[in-house]
Structure formats: C-alpha cells, structure tokens
Amino acid sequence: SMMAGTGGSGFTTNPLPNTNSRFSADFNTSSALSQFLNTTVSFSTSVQSLYLRKGGFGCVAPYGTLVFRGGGSAAFGAAGRYLVQNGSIVSVTLLSGGDSFSELPNVLVSDNSCVGFEIVPALSDASIAGFARRISQVAQYSVLDDGIALVMDTPLPSPPSSTASYRIDPIVQNSCVGRTCTSFV
Image 1 (cartoon, rainbow, N blue to C red):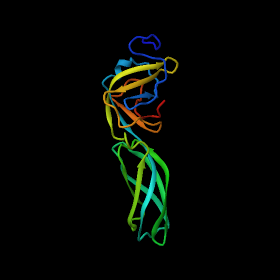
Image 2: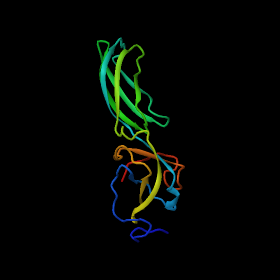
Image 3: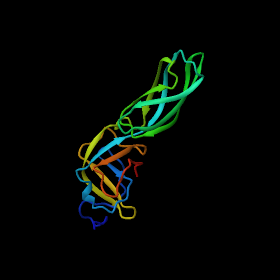
Image 4: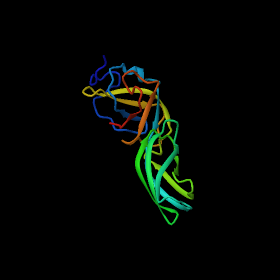
C-alpha cells in the first residue's frame, strides 16, 4: 500500500490548498490511488443569490414560489419565494441554493399571470461551473484521513471554493458512489 510521508511517488503529508490546477477531495478511499488517474472530474455549484431586475406586472396572487428551470442536467433543489404588491413582484427570497448546477437556471414564478418580470440568479462558483477536467496526477497528503489531492491536466479559471461540487466519472470504487461529492477539504 502507498503511504504518505515516504517521500516516494510524489506524495506529501502537507495539507494542499485548492489551486487552479489541484483540489483536495473530501472522500476517504481504500482504492488504489491510480484508479483516479485519467478519470474526468466535472464541477458544479449552487445558486448563491437572486436579483430582482424587473418586477413585471399582471400578477394576481399576493405571493408564490419560484420555479427554477434548467441549470444543467443534474441540477436540483433550488427553491425560493416571491411577494407581490399592486400586481408587481416586489421581493424574491432564495430558500435553498440547491446543488449540481453547471449553468445558470431560468427563474420563473408560480403565477402564470405575471409577465414582464426578470429574476437574475448568480452561482456561487460561476467561474468553474460546467467545467470538466482530466485527472493527470494523484497525491495522498494525509495518512490519518486518507486525504487525496487530485491534479487536473488543465487549470481551471479560478480555484474551487468550499461550496463547489464535483463528480468523478467513471466513479472510483469507494469514492462518491451514487452521489455528487461536495465540500472541499
């Protein structure tokens, strides 16, 4: 088995901060680290905020729920509500940012009589959402928690934050089986 701290195979015991080309994975694995080589990591994120650019008109209901359409094939869980005065939307509230957004969703409202409104979402890791990279190198940086640093073949536009999500394909045994891995070390 490969052990950190031996000085061989490029392993190090130092914690590795996220950079544009390397990130610390949050899963524990008993798999051979070489299984991660040449896998593909895809980055996604959550909706961070909403901005009401235009309130529109014609709304009948005094309030309602926001409807998030699109955001990428795996996007789910974003939720919000809005308030209406005099037929116009006057405020929007994000209740949940959801997860696995690889692009901006369209934000609609539950009242079909509302027209002319514009609600603009922002993603928390917009600069890396939707990017996919090949894993070209793997480093174990801590024996205690099996921390693994994955090195990408091409740098991202910016380092992933602690709110970014990633998925590894094909799934490596004991890594992120059946779910999107979240939260960077």
